Length: 427
Ligand code: GCO
Ligand code: MG
Image (cartoon, rainbow, N blue to C red; front, side, top):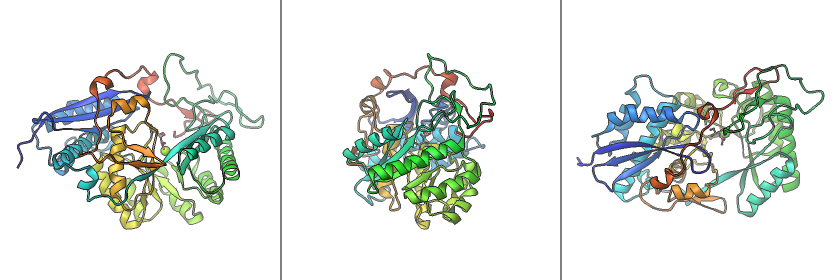
């Protein structure tokens, strides 16, 4: 038994590139042995802070950081009522930091602790957005020049709020014959506050039309050599989603993401029977019980869980193994609100997992690279490990403190997306 003990657990807030990040740092009685983990729940960061500081920290101080599995299992049930994005993110901060510590003690990167590399680097996809097809094409071509081979494409639906793009507030509904506004529940965003996702009006018909037009445009202008991806981000009623997935088939997407919300999991069975469009799902899952039926019945092709959202590397590596048995590939969620520490954790699993598919990558901003020394390098569309022990990444706390959270409407929560009649749409 080692004499190493958890001496302190600290929660750090920082916003280097306009996205609010939450990092947990575990310190031990050996001053140079510490670890960092991603606990970012950007819409509710202070709730994660309380879960770590008020509950996990007193529970963990004095424990042996070597016992990752025991710490994960005991922390998970220490609230009796478990799961959910707040508690799971708090636990992920702890879990990833413990894997970081274990790697540092062993002098090994975490992928070596997991059994070693199954590949040299991880292929990533990036996001091409635009308010018109041409703008998306410009983005696609820029990324192709930089060597990216997998590119997600999203375009604004004229006159409507559209996931993946800021803009169109829903004030002007595009077609003269589209639905008239039947609600007064729209407001003007306050000018002095930042909105992560402004609300507004969304209608499935115009969205599907503009997205299908985009795929047609990109294939006709750019061709078939690159892989294109698309995120529906829920929003469309299931039967329309099934029709959409069928129409999309001809454009040979690498995957179609979040066609339905997790509440509509069962509809994926119908999609499966009607089209071979590859299906990716998972960033909203909290619990393995949501995942198991999707994998064992092969209803999805890519599991794209947000690793901090399910509690860290410990549960994610088990789900990767479950997926391997069914030949479902991993595509861990990697947006801008996965911190660079979280991206480093994703990479550890990507390298070790034989059934890895693709890694989402939100290009690290310059400030983020400075705040998080050791950010994995991306070259020619692949993310490479730096070979350092643990997660291979650190946080410069003095610099992180120079980027405090900015003020945001509703404490940073998302605004509401609505149908033209004012009813709420899943985001
Ligand atoms: C993606 C996601 C994100 C989420 C965001 C929520 O596939 O990248 O859908 O953009 O919306 O992470 O905070
Ligand atoms: Mg998504």
